Length: 80
Picture 1 (cartoon, rainbow, N blue to C red):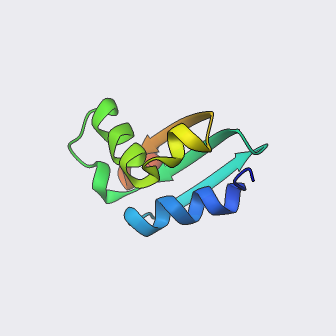
Picture 2 (picture 1 turned 90 degrees about the vertical axis):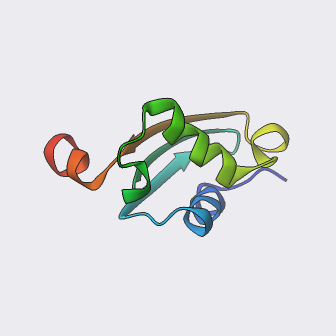
């Protein structure tokens, strides 16, 4: 069974404290906006690795593509 955007959001929220978390998708391809203090001081690749770690094996087994916008709260406020 393919995951829903709500399930992907729940997986991420369970591992990363988020100020804003939006996930859209069609069951295999998803787009996410993730705003978290956890991204503070981290480069883009490290931010994405945090999200991939939150999703674990689901990235290989269930989710075929995930496009992410990962921002700190300040970045979201200024550039959102």
